[in-house]
Amino acid sequence: MTDTPKTPPSRSIGRKAIRISAKPRELMTPTPELHGVWQARIITLFPSAFPGVLGESLTGRALQEGLWQLSTYDLRDFGIGKHRNVDDTPAGGGAGMVLRADVLGPAIEQATAGTSPNWPLIYLSPRGRRMDQPMMRTLARTDGMTLICGRFEGVDERVLQHYGVQEVSLGDFVMTGGEIAAQALIDATVRLMPGVLGNASSTEEESFSHGLLEHPQYTRPAEWQGRPIPDVLMSGNHGKIADWRQARAEETTRARRPDLWAAHQAKAPAKEG
Image 1 (cartoon, rainbow, N blue to C red):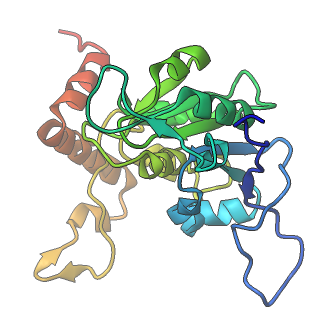
Image 2 (image 1 turned 135 degrees about the vertical axis):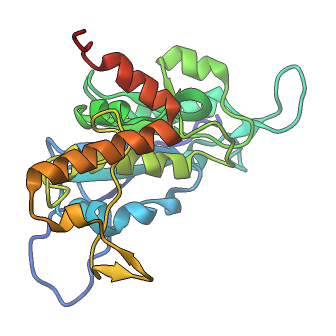
C-alpha cells in the first residue's frame, strides 16, 4: 500500500448561459472545459477562495458568459499519508514549513495536463518579477495560465527548477499566501480580453497604457464642495481636452512615479535643436 493519492477532480467555474431561469446561477457549479476559451488553473490549499471578487462585476459576467474559465486544484487532495500532509520543515533548519515537492509535483502534472506551449506556469512569490501592465498584455495573449498559490515559507526549490516555473510578485511585501495575488493577476489579465470591457477604448486611455499614469477623472455634479470641474473638460473642444489630459498625465507621473517618468522620457523621440 502506498501513500500515492488517487487523481482528484478539479473544479471548473464559468459557463455559457443557455436558458432563462428564475433561480440564480452559481459560478461554483462544476462545468466541462470550454474549447478554445482562455483558462486560469489554480493550485491552492483554499479553493473556496475562488472565484472571490473575480465572480463579481465585469470579470464575473465574462465568466458566466464563457469568455474565460477558472479551475481550481485543491493541493490537500495531493497530500501524503492519512493526514494529507503537504509540507515539512526546511532542510538545514529554520522557522516555518515548506510545501513538499512530492505533493506539488503531482498537482502541477494534473493542472497542466493538455496545455499548449503558450501556457505559462506561474508561482506567486515575493521574489518574482513585479506585475506590470506589459506583463498583463502578454498574459492576455496566451491560451491560459496555471498559477501556484504558495503558503508557509514557500515551495521546494526543486519544483521551480524542474518545471521551469515563472515567479511573479504583486509587490515588494509579503502576504500569508498567493491567493490574493493570483486574483489580482487574473483580474488585470482578463479585463484586457475582447468582449470583457464594454468600451474597448477604456484599456487604451488608462494608467500605464502609454507609459504614464492616467489623467484625473471628473463627473457630475459640475461643482462639489466648492470644487468645479475644470472648464476645459466642459468646453466641448476635444483637441484642448486631449492636450489637457496629456499634460495632467505627465504632471502626475512626474510627481508620483519618477521611475515611470524616466522610462517615458527615454522612449520619447529626441527634439530637434
